[in-house]
Length: 402
Image (cartoon, rainbow, N blue to C red; front, side):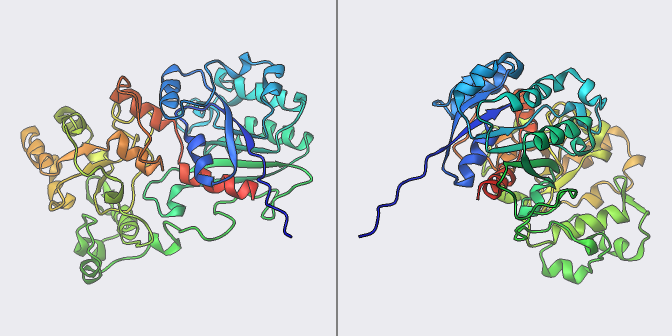
């Protein structure tokens, strides 16, 4: 007679810098038998969103360094999921690294780890590109090695999974020895998932490939380019909107990569009130030439940051809702036009911001995820910009545990 299967105990997970619950959703998405026993974050607005979506999870609304070793020990956790503040390491920031006061809590965690009564079996950390060259990273590695952890570092983007949003991030997986990773490389930061089943958003040829007009028609291409100019011009020739031939070729290739999903797959079907999302004329006039504009059939978008909706430059793509209007025609001789003529041209594109729900879709948040009504539009953009891509993290959690 066969012995009945005994269900394995749930892994007890501690979520640090929990934000709006991206790590929690990733844990659910990994299908690992686990439960979040506590979430810790000082951001009261983020905690309201977290509580709305995970009402049964215990939230500690306090600083991490405000918790004692005894408090951590009582939680008896098997795994830490964390995304420490990225501002000390961002390319556009002051890059003060461990001299930035916002790293204080992270350094506290590193000091705390050797003192725990039961060290966690698994650790996953997410941060921005740039963390991998920081002093904070070096201190992390020193701590992991002294506490006898195996670890592997990654630089990964959702584009590897066919998601049309560039969000390159640093990840570290650590596992308490004697367990180890079969894909461990010790000195190499992996830029691909080790199981090799991910989709490459671009390949080496995508930056030099020139697509013919006939190919574009066959593929239903809507990449908003003047194909004849692309074929005949030089790579650094500015075609329109400060776009060089090289830039346009790359976007052409990305938009014709059928392994990537289209932007339209992540959009809301119909907006009840689209007015808050249309870009004000004053902003359009000032920033039109530097906006990253994508159409519904595009297969790419740039990283959304916490400044989206407030600042225009480098904070994320904007959506062209007029599908029958080409960018090249709108921006032709643009700089020679009067302000009124420019606005008339730009109005044809019907440009708007992506909604918070659409950004949440690109980040992998499930349909049931929601914001409390009292959370403002600005706060929603800010919280999403500080969050992570759930599909990427879910895949990493599964790799780490299985």
